[in-house]
Length: 243
Image (cartoon, rainbow, N blue to C red; front, top):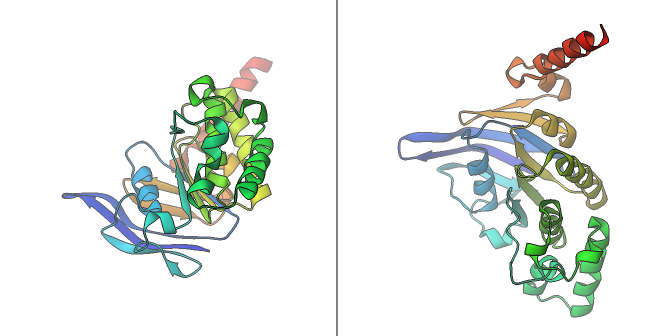
């Protein structure tokens, strides 16, 4: 469904992305692991149409996206900050994308109601964003993105600002919603555990260069990802505790 080829981007003489390429099947999520400053956000913003690339191509089902306006790409970008409209209720925020697409009021109400129920926030429908917790705000942001039925969702460290317990809840919710709505997504994260939980395909972005792994086993085995080292640490700790 998604094909990215030879996308490069520089700021002045500083290369940020170097010939990025990958393919992703419909209804799959690719986890891209990378440290801060490796180019993860720049890549997603290029795919969303929020920044321009210097070269390369991005297609969905064979249709060129890079020369299409952002509002016509059917690609939604979600960042760590939910960026809700502060003057709108939860219900109004979720329905915003439907309103600007001028669908009928009956259909809008029905779609928003379904989304509120699926996200478990029906009781918060009339609250303003400043009355919500961080996890609740992120649920509303997901609802606003999903209700318009985009072809691709781009997740830029979406749970990075949440506490550990809420983060786990949101990861579980995403997996449930992704299956329910047949979501195709790119997730960028610096958290290897999150990458493993949420991804079906795996890659690493380092200094602007992307490595795509053939499967989860190869991703886990790659020393640069530090997974085996971390597993070894916990195994040693458990042995010490048992002694």
